[in-house]
Length: 300
Image (cartoon, rainbow, N blue to C red; front, top):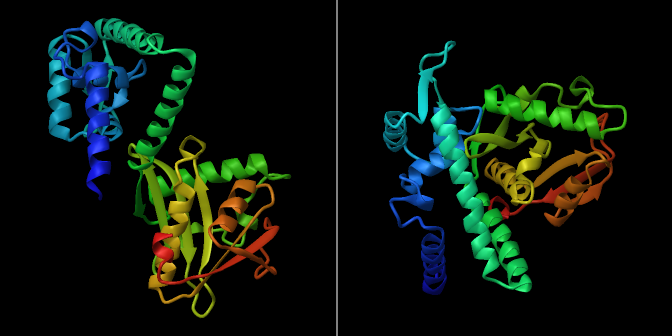
């Protein structure tokens, strides 16, 4: 990485830290440092699973435990094991915690308004657009992709959400039993690979590839949650699966899609896939694609 880029990122971090007040022990004029304040905000009105909270913020368990103990001592939260699994703890705000969270919300709005008020209209538009772009890029960098069994709970959650979306978008609905791959199990070892993307610990995307003897590998069940679209995740999942195909010795990969999935077709074409005659009898397919792979496919 070049020195100039690193210096720009560090300068940006310093400016943001100074402007939003993270250098002070009394964040936004409260009695809390920014870590405790952010935890209060993330717990929310409904409470949170402590493990999910930890994943959401990217913090280690020891640090989160210390923050929660401090908030408990101040009477702002309660932490209790769940009845069905005492290893899983849930944190909830008390009445005092909800009151302090409301103060944090109000003062955060006031700080944001103060930052914007000091700029003219054109500058405000530029700043908020730049912030949105920075947020999108930083969020993309926090997504993890992991190979999982198709039967794993996170895999199953992705597939349920995917099938539900297909049911809404396809004319006549969607029935996995009519698909060329009715059972996602074939996308797992030993004849396939299934990958799941997670954002803040939550599954937000998936894809599988079936390796079938002399036939070209076949990509199936590519999906990205609406909440994670625009992060380049579809292209990343596609590149991951192509990488597995290359490592298996394949030089061609195939997939097909429905005409209702316009975003998918645009992704495949931009990734180098060319439309070909139908190579299977997929009930829901209107377009079939093929791509010639090379050793650079894994990082496309």
